[in-house]
Amino acid sequence: MTLSRRDTFRLGGAVALTSLTATQAATATSNTAQTVDPAHSFSPGKPGVDYRPVITPNGVTLPFKIVDGVKVFHLIPEEVDHEFAPGLEARCWGYNGHVHGPTIEAVEGDVVRIYVTNRLPAATTVHWHGLLVPSGMDGVGGLSQAPIEPGQTFWYEFKLLQHGTFMYHSHHDEMTQMAMGMLGMIVVHPRRPQGPMPDRDYALMMSEWSLEPGTRRPDPNEMTDFNVLTFNARAFPGTDPLVAATGERVRIRFGNLSAMDHHPIHLHGNVFTITETDGGPIPESAQHPDTTVLVPTGATRTVELVAETPGDWAMHCHMTHHVMTQMGHDLDLVMGADSEALQNALKPALPDSMIMGTEGMGDHGKHIGMGHMDVPENSTPMVGANGPMGYITMGGMFTILKVRGVVDQNTASSFYKEPPERQARLATADELTRDGIAP
Image (cartoon, rainbow, N blue to C red):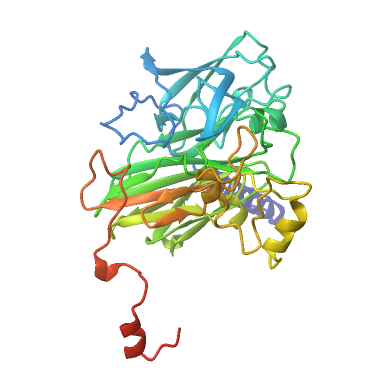
């Protein structure tokens, strides 16, 4: 057959178009991090066999049962009385009696069926944040599904096409419902793991709340001035520590569904590698060591490390106001003021007043804890906790990674003791003289 010039151009254009379409399809598949064939059937992944179950500090994992090869979960939105920290409680909205909701855990390729029974006084939905699901299962009220009215039970079912760290939350009146606590973590383990399995796998959800001292309802109308910052809906000293034995591989999954803020999470004493986002695994060639990971709002980040140095290592948001709880933002600046003169001036009108802050706010929580200062009911303004070396002047989005040679039942509740030669201390007069230091 002889091809004309026009036929040649026509055929060349078709070949080019086919090549471009194939390239775009391959790129799309890569970008969605889909790693299993939707048509292929898999047996349900088993905890302790196919994956090491994730640990949710201060939280729980949602139980499931298997019916005809499908993992069946039951999620119950409802009001929950929740404690953020000792002395600070609120009437929140959550799931299955918890704030935040239980972690949903499964394996790539599993088919999951999730029933949602609404026991709230308002309609709701559930959005599976980051998961690739059919449009009708996406959970956006009014767009992809009808809202779940109070008393109704809705059915969701889909195959898990990717692995990684994801989240779920209300997507109906989400400004109100997420601010009240309606969110949780989803962990999907790989069907065929690449690389070593972690010895400890932790999940931490970050969120922020507005809770005025003396009140018992989070304020969903707040836009900027959040005063309770949490890991898994707990503020230090209410946060459970993470523990690890030396030499263990530790994975930490961070999710951020804060209303307005990103969180740079800094870990002391350890170097980690950022291995995943909610979009999928980061290629090994693009991974790099770090000690701080920025977790944008609406996103997840996963880091991995090998615990090497024993100690109690602080892990916290490095936005400094995020490690304080219910700080008074509307107070006048008194740094540098004459506290005695100011106290005397106020005594006629406020005889029980106690001036704080002229030299910083570090002792504020300690004085409250010792009973020196009255505070409003149900409040923990700028309260930290007693540590082994004094008062820890941080609260909020703060916790501790406890690394030990051996982890036992006492590790979480005990503090690490360094040998004297490795412990910072008060310098002696002889040392100062020897080294020519003028204090």
